[in-house]
Image 1 (cartoon, rainbow, N blue to C red):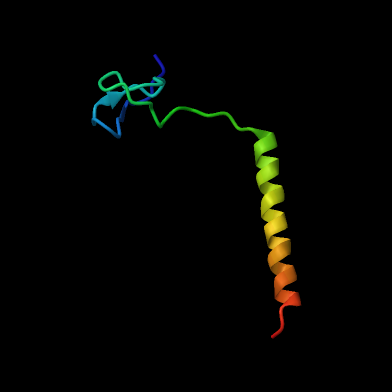
Image 2: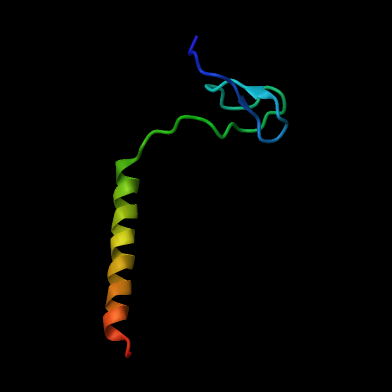
Length: 65
């Protein structure tokens, strides 16, 4: 037994075991599944945020006051 408490289904309100991929009552996908981290995706997001910040800084310096 995993020891985790069941969570409520967002669609029907039934109890869904934490390790279940679908609600046993209505078949809706569970939104409480454990997801692994993807370092490549995190790196792309970090690069995107840095580029947006650099673009904003360049616009602040470049635009006339």
